[in-house]
Length: 555
View 1 (tube, rainbow, N blue to C red):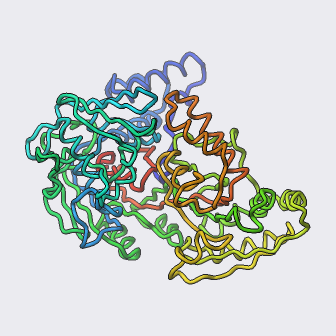
View 2 (cartoon, helix red, strand yellow; view 1 turned 90 degrees about the vertical axis):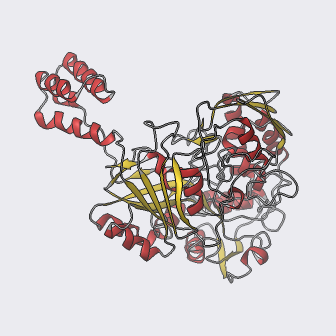
């Protein structure tokens, strides 16, 4: 994640020469930044050490800018709203309701932090036992719903049960499918038993469907009223068009997050209208800026960019049970004939991050480093080597693509055709109709274009797409070692050992799998200088993990 307002903190120690004074200057600056001394004390001390007035004032300005202040209204122009939107958390489909519900009104048991880790939200802590099959969650004390009801374990149990069961129509049903049972343990405890161990449960519980609502006392929840235990109370709500929320007077975490008095969310699906609203100040922040027009943001007065590269990915699955991709050497030849940098620059306008034929993205916690899994480069000679290992001197293949696969997929095929020539590979780009693409092309043709939004955990994406028996195994790939590690990693509670297993699984997919993943795609957003955005923001979802109303403040 990066934003155009990020800058390195000014170090007053750079203005003094001897080491002893530098140490004193660093300590003085740390004391001021942490609030141990005031502005007057800092300025006096800095000038006494020989720091310039300009340098000391710069630090003061930086500290003031980084200190949240309460008040104001945040206005968000956002996509994904529809007049058919309902308040049922199980029916949340897109960005508008994710931001309003989870991000403002009805938080979850857990939340994802900017560093990708899970932290308690409406629960304070948790402990796993029995090989991560049994989990106890400790409900946060002193939390009140907007109707005055005190949060207890029944609210949490019934809120999760809302998505469970064979008749559930919730979009979160898959997330909770591993839960065998959930029960209260007094008013402040929740016990969850899983069908099999899963160390990712706290992360899974941050899913945007799993908002906590007040229990009706009969194992159902009150989702219709929009009442939650979040920082903001639903004041006005026209589905998909406009929502106004106001600060909850009894919010449990006042002073530490959620600094705005009000949040106004506007559904603006048209990209030109969103850009116009931002440039005129009608809104403070927007999502989904088209890559083609992203550079215009930099030319707008009082507007800044916020670019998040998370787990959204462009992929090109090769079917491992269809010729010529049954041979691992052919698959590796294809992976080396691809000029990823050229695709990133010319198809995605530089907004993204190079992929490495591994679906674990920048927002995942156990992603392999480049030391653990070196970046695969464009190398036509190595592609020729693998072709020779397969007993081939050349290769002719078809790439099936449509823009619904990913935007620019057909043009990407044309670029690959040129880069592949040096490897002796001839690519015929077959333009497919958008209509029916996912039924007639994806998982049907031997090599095609695709995209995935990514998944917040390694287990989730591996289980859903790369496990040999997965319904959406879109490379038809089967690897017994990978499957074995997948089950083992799921129940491993030692973080270091768990990381080793996930990194090894990434190596196996990278080397043996039928996945070509050239680029992780950026989410491009814009915001006005009227709001202050922290230097580090989350990239699990756009707009700071859709918690912008809680983490940003008025400038």
